[in-house]
Length: 193
Image 1 (cartoon, helix red, strand yellow):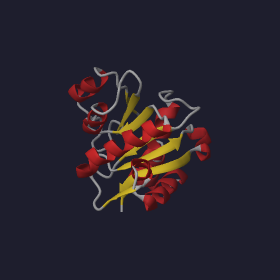
Image 2 (cartoon, one colour; image 1 turned 90 degrees about the vertical axis):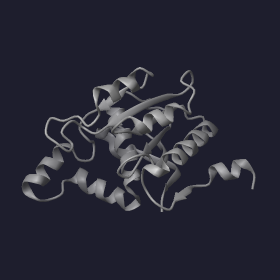
Image 3 (cartoon, helix red, strand yellow; image 1 turned 90 degrees about the horizontal axis):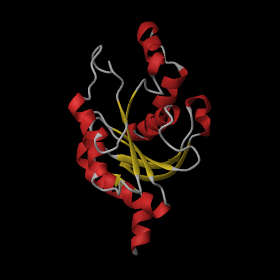
Image 4 (tube, helix red, strand yellow; image 1 turned 135 degrees about the vertical axis):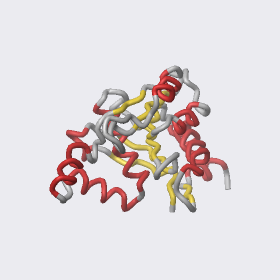
C-alpha cells in the first residue's frame, strides 16, 4: 500500500485514552498537511495534549487553539488548568479558551436541578454514540468558533479524547453555536473502536 493510501485510512485504537495521544496527534498532523488544513483545535485540561501537538507543527505555518474545561467543571471555583500550565501554552503562542461547554453549559445546571436532559445535552449524548472524542471534537470547535479563535471559511482539525489525552481526530467544517447544524464532520482520522 502506498503512503497516500495509508494516511487516508481511518485508524481505530483498541483502547481509548492518553496512551493513544502520540499516535492520534501524529496521524492528525499528517492528514491535516495532506489536506492543507493549518488550524488545529484541541481539547486539553493540563496542557499535555496541546504541547504534544505543538512539538509536531510548524508554528510559522500552523496554528493551535487549546480548549480547556470551564472553571468549576469538577469543583466550584476551581480551574483544572494551573496558571503554570496555561503560561506554558501561551508562551508558545497557543491561546487557551476556558468557557462554558457548548453542549452542556446552563443546560447541565437545569438537568442537575430538575432531572431531565436539555436539547444540547441530548445532542451530546447522541454524538457520544460515536465516541466521547467525536462529541468533544464538535463541542470544542463550536466553542472556539464562538470565541472568534478559528477561521470560519475553511476546515480545521479537531482533536479530542476520552478522559485524558487525545484519541480522536476529525477534519471538520466549523459552525457557531447559533448555527450548530451547519457544523460538518468531513473526515475521521482516528478514534477508539
